[in-house]
Length: 307
Image (cartoon, rainbow, N blue to C red; front, side):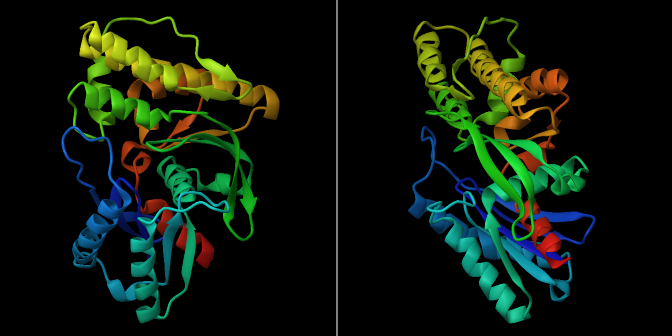
């Protein structure tokens, strides 16, 4: 068994990987109604409370003594200066488990975990041996990455394009909270958007390979103030994000050439985004349970490092 910890700003998650199947327990962090996120101190506290409960649930189902290595996400991205205090909770627990069981501990980033979880969910872990494009689209990240094999880190994710201001998940959550939805708002906003028949002509704001999403929030506010349908507002938000991601990908393909494309992160599970981009580019999308924050990819990282 290979154990993974992930304590992001959204979810407490712990997972076992036996080389074929993932066994996972996770809990969304609680956000007060009307608020659009958590302070790091609040996230750290909730992770500290959640992790022992999740570990107990997981170890009641599996043999804890069979752990061969432990993986943990210790930072958002594998770059200098990437840091968030919430990841310290997972790291401290991972160090304890590794020490008590005298097994190796492997540290990586939250982003690498997302990518590996996506590859696992589409049964394409073989892609770690070749270059591909990964989109990480979530609450705090809207990035396109050139992913290449790496002896030390398993995969190296190089940033090649991003949203220069508002991130896709922020646009979704801000619009959702404005309409009275509970944070995080992605799943509910997706349902609302599907109930709209309105079509929008959208020309995303681009700067070479990068996109800008700040206009999404401004337009959604105006629609809300004009008493337009909440379903139409939801449809506009996800349609704009979809068009922006599609334009980013088209420009990336022209510059870097065609190669496999994988979408990870919670926002990429949106049905409108998957339908538009999946059909146009034959892109892979992680299954919903592996799109949102999870420790599955971290457990897989521990497995791959142990080979």
